[in-house]
Amino acid sequence: MAGFIPFALVLGAQATQKGLSAVEVPLMTGLNFGGGSEFSAVDLWTSPPHVLLIVAVTFLINSRHLLMGAALTPYLQHLTKRKVFAALFLMCDESWALGLADARKRKQAPQLSLPYYFSVAFGLYLTWVVFTALGAMLGPKLGDIEAYGFGIAFPAVFLVLLRGMWPGWRAARPWLVSLLVAALTFLLVPGAWYVAAGALSGLVAAYILSENA
Image (cartoon, rainbow, N blue to C red; front, top):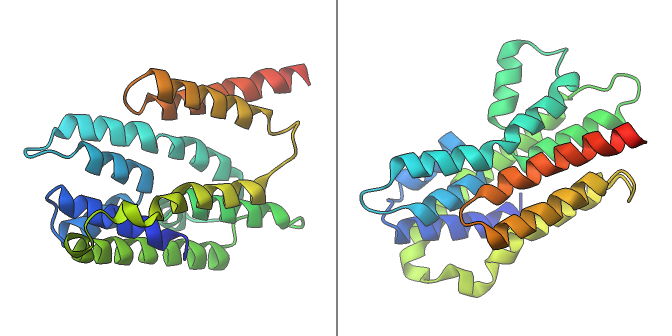
């Protein structure tokens, strides 16, 4: 949750600099709850906004949630649909990684622990909404908040998550393929296509490597 605070402030400040109000920012972050897509939406925001472009890019970036939800499926069988929908609404990269790691540790009955998952997920959700709102209120006074170096918090959180889920070099080969393809696509192709390219290449690599194992 502490790692959420810096880039939540950055997003809130950037959003107000693009013309969103201190009410609209937490409304956006509370309804969407997807930091990467929200940063892209704010970056693309104009007056009037190009709604179809923003929707398309948001869908593209959030498409990784399709794979994340599929990975959670075996651990959700014991839950009712209402609880599953609530869990998926609160799912972000961090709550997914922590919830999945915790479920896999339960050798007797590998399943998602709702008390653990909801305490993590709701804490992250509340932190994100509150501090994006605070960033929106403080943004005009702080000026360029990225000058304080808060932008490093975003990749730092993902590096910590990666370390916690690291399966070893052999099993991590699809991750490395995904990283390389995403980086090349980011450098060579404009837009947010690197997200889809990284995800698809990782899936293909995982399939090919598993067939050859």
